[in-house]
Amino acid sequence: MLWYFLTKNHCFVDGNKRVGFYAASILLKINGHSDNIDDDEAYDKAIQISCSQLTGKALDTYILELSH
Image (tube, rainbow, N blue to C red):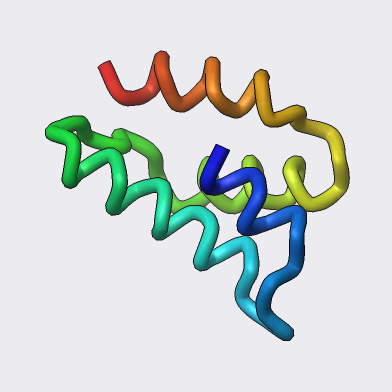
């Protein structure tokens, strides 16, 4: 949800999608998981979030599958 809300809530003038992705990636790594996502896939997911094509629940499911 961190990635989702940092992207959707536009807390910064620019870079919300990048910050959201990197914050989620770092959080996974801190908790002993890997993110296993390439740059193109991360970009696609970030765009889907910002265009409301990906829900928070769907993103949670995706990250859960990705981190194992």
